[in-house]
Length: 199
Image (cartoon, rainbow, N blue to C red; front, side, top):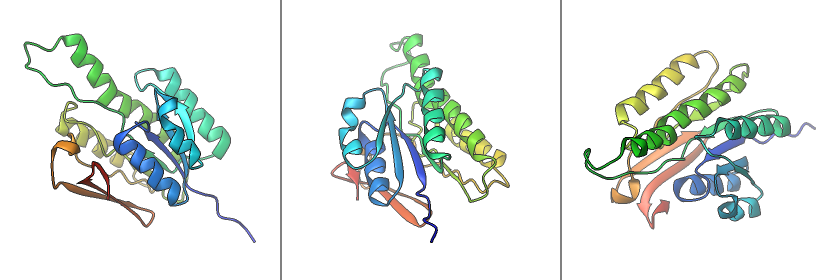
């Protein structure tokens, strides 16, 4: 009897918030989960649940390449990519230094694009409907750009079975009552403002 291999998920921003919530929810659903963040010590609960904590800075290409290479080496595949790494920066245009704005775009947009590029290259040859998720491009990465990125990935993935849902941008914790559902492989993940987590 052949045992079906567990689907493999890579989740950035796994040290807190929605990234951690997704990681724990996918672990409970039977996925092989790799949580990625700069602070491994904040992902002990993911490791405790059977997942793997990877040190990754989405502005450092070498860390992203190393993470993807490790997953492929250990699992042979990546089925789900969920980009949750990101942060908000408030301030008037005249008050925010250009360097700060540039750093934020590197994290919230360029990092997402690069990691998606690395993973989509590994997924392109697969036939069993791999999934790319880019749900949380924050408001600081302009929503139109975020959605355009998801659209481009979707178009490039035509014929591979990859799906690229692009969820809401912005800080959900400050949008009471907002709900969004991502569904893939029969698993529904509902994001909502209930105790700041998944409900």
